[in-house]
Length: 561
Image 1 (cartoon, rainbow, N blue to C red):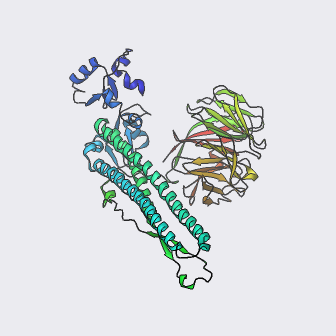
Image 2: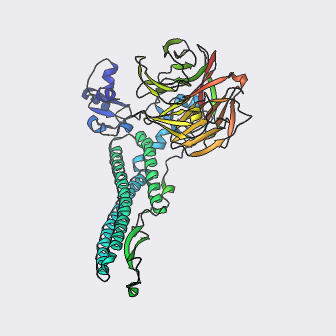
Image 3: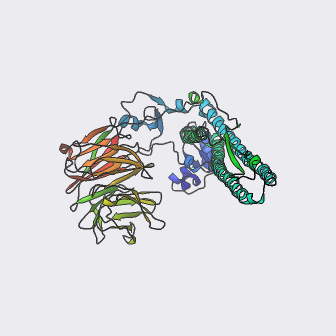
């Protein structure tokens, strides 16, 4: 993207490197001074709106990545499909949207988008969120101030009360003072923590407002239209935060007061208490701005969430695999396929046409593999070997080995952590910072089976072959029992919509489960190719599903909804 912005697209096409001075969003390329003059004089482009390249580069990087053309077919977007909530080129409509009814010309959809009620509403909502967060923060700060004043007043009352009684009450005073300070400190910590969180959200909203102003000034209509969906998600999350603060009574005002014991007339009889610290909670006086019917004013198209019934498979390729006991598989970003062989300790890499590329020999058992694109590393588990090995894909050399103290089968990576199937040791997690191992779920997981991570959820196969979904802290979300429909479940993977694919080793099939675990569907039967299928992998970038039998064959499918 950087060279595309800094070099004149017309000159670059003629193998001439000249710096661009302006950007045309409709042509989706930069122009030098000379080409700018031709561009302004040409009948086909004289109406195009151009901006200085220095101003255009001020747009957020995510906005600059939005292009006017289809990355699959390299043709300009001309249609917007409301059903799939996406822009389409001419060939996209023919290939994948021929049955869609709600197809509109993209020029009609994006026309006047910056002056639309949806864009105006977005500005209002960001301003409203910012003001509400400021009001809550100021209210919490005032509460801290009032708590301090309460404390000061009570200190004075306590000392005045102490002067009325004998010296033997010193100990009771000390206990009571500690109770007072502890109560104040506890509430201060709660409020300070909330204020810190709110200040972070304020900074996020301010950044969103700044980005929205830049988008309004310099982004194309298509970029504006598509970026509004991301901003809408951030707005919704922050609105939900404010609603949760109010619902959970986190903005209630806390005060401290003091109530004397009514036993002073009984002195010098034994006095058990000098008084009681009272913690009173009441509703906050902070008034928030709530725009009525604001959801009805948002005209950004709603996203269709595909179900298991919408899912379609198209066989793209049958691959002749090398080796035996293929336990896991994966797809590299460039389309190459990788397969691990358990006993031989080999990782075989196949080219996109299915021909052999090369082999990595690890010298030990290989149960499962996981490729981390950011670091270009293979994560390799050894099954009963009780270790995890990290291999540099570029050099083929081992970077380090982590001893786990239990069997290690299926593995997945998320945010600097490795989650793995520890068999009898349950579902475990390894921190890549210090290689520490923690048990997340105490259970017996099916031996040789995979696990998967999607969003903030983990998926694994229990010893009884039920499919389990839990959060990243191990809390159960749902459990799906599929016997006798699915037998010998081993492979598991998840697509972009949370649909879960599971392979049945003994039932020779592949099943897909709905994101909530309540519904399932037979996707592939033995007649379709699966014969002792062990490995599954879903590539979320290009919607491809790779299925590998234990030997001989693997199948690559295009997945559509």
